[in-house]
Length: 202
Image 1 (spheres, rainbow, N blue to C red):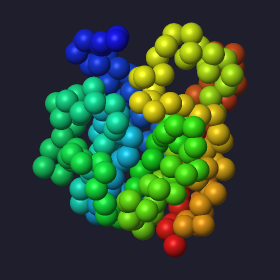
Image 2 (cartoon, helix red, strand yellow):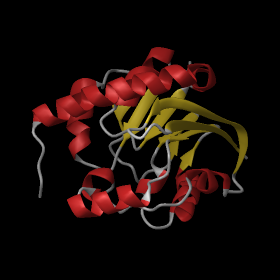
Image 3 (cartoon, helix red, strand yellow):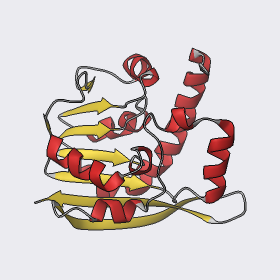
């Protein structure tokens, strides 16, 4: 198995901080009301770069979790505090004001629709913030397979379903707002779209 050094993780953390700074600044007006003074769960937080910025919105608390066990220690070293903690038992029933899901619907196995419904049964919340970029292209799919790094992206396998369809499919939620913003340009000059979907549970 490929193992990354602490230096590799540190570099990746800083790179992710730079990307998430751009994305969070573009969506602050939309996201901040659902974070400030709220109890937040970031499900699929990786090693916490997004939490670094969400914590600046003064939440009551933020709990993070990711299935990739490499990320836990990095999270604790870089991000954790009295208000920012790691969920030690992800199988237990959880409660929060806001559930944050960033680019995770494509990394939850072959059936993201059932995954989302099960997640809503497990995590009880008032609102959900779901964010994602462009869907995985066929070229990226091929690249991931060739380089055998799907373990890094997901511990259970990838899917290529449209995140918008996944999150809007459940009868347990309703759409409050869907924001799309250009946050960067690709190498071939195409717009990179960042989606922020606000849902309310029913």
